[in-house]
Image (cartoon, rainbow, N blue to C red; front, top):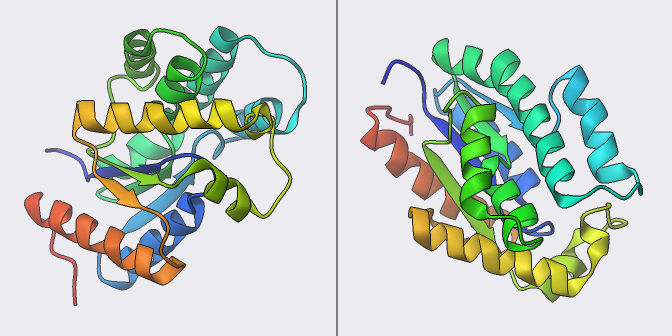
Length: 210
């Protein structure tokens, strides 16, 4: 491989993935692995504007248009941040990536998942994470943990979020993504993710310092 490894964490909102991404980036940097984090959508001026439309706005957006807005944000993020850092030898940890579109607009809104994978590959120039970890939690528990007002996607209700959760599990089994129970407290969950990531990086010839 001519670039550093690319890792993403995904799952329904409320699983703690944003917190776990930050903890993982800090852990790897503290243990000798140059690492940066990013959030998808977002991370660029264009991405920030699209994130506002996609998550904060209450405007109605059709599923296909919604998916393409996510893809546009991701294309910019890959071109300006993710790929350059990978090529400079930095591990990148992304809070969400293409799998989220496959699930949120595919499984949960009836767009063909394989079409979304194909558009996702186009939007990133073929770049997909080398390791995608799915954090899993029952929907009611995830909603209770969220601790903030629901964004535009989350406000679609429990049935929608259940379809999202089910979609993540289907895609995880189809693609071999590890599924991690997100119910433990923050540090216990962090340690479980660290074990997975250390083993993965070891398989790529990268040793995490003790």
